Image (tube, rainbow, N blue to C red; front, side, top):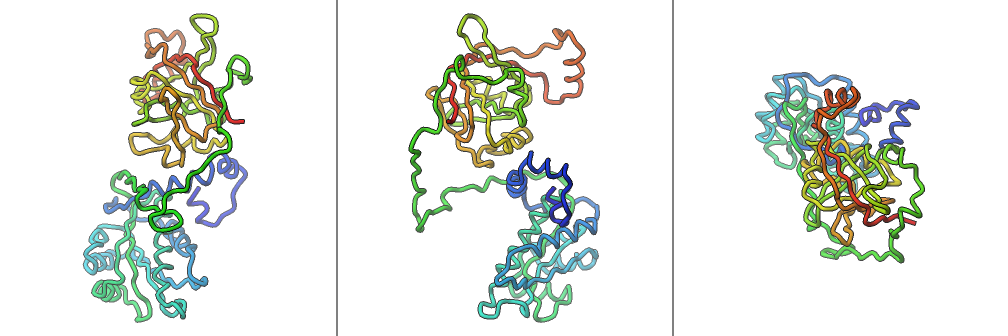
Length: 379
């Protein structure tokens, strides 16, 4: 979808529905957080239509007084790529890449009263290109040229730049040779509020965001479609030191082992990261959300690769038992584990489960039955 917007087309009704279901916020943030510098590439050219989309993204950047003081030199010639690699010691990978874009500043277009603003303008264009490349399945790396005079002179000579065009950086681009996990760069030490060193302002809610309710009296939803609602639910387990959540679409509500024993049953596959927390935790929570957009991310990304809650801006809270849940949820049901059992294929009495696990790569599910000990919902 990101590539579609870069192409400047019009959305179909199906694309509109998909955008509403997934959410542009999630798409954009996921793309930003997944971007990383790629320095090795497949022996495969970058298609011309994708090159033009990269350039369109670059030219969509903001610039001082809308001067747009940039010029882009697209390099696909192997000899020129080799020349760029030799001109800049940080751009050696260009010799083995199918594409480079030299992002330049045009001094004749720069803001007159503050001429150096062109540097910020072309830097913004550079970041746009990097994010567009990520969104299109390409890998890219920003290699600096300006303001190192020697590099500026050598790069300008390689691509025959006139005096008023200054090479700012070279973006080396191609199809990644291998996957590279992004780094978690979040650091609260780099943030001040209101003044340098200022602390984050305290927020005080006039009343609790959640209130406790009795599932026997106030739970009015249909148990047959509760887990199949759009987007599914989240199941979360862990403790105050570490926890993880995942999207689930299977589950059951009911009673077991005596009058008044309200239970929730959930199913977690063998290879899911959340299963490790379900195994060691005495409690778990299930959650529903008014905004379903983040549930897709929770269901397609693994907590082994990073903090999914932090990536979505979710805030972890804890019950009196130390069971994690998210403050952004609409309804939270806390359960104490009563029974755990992995599915045994010898007990399958129908082809439906057999066929499912024949094509399911995450292993057999384990069912967890928990007794409801607390239920919370927002007004």
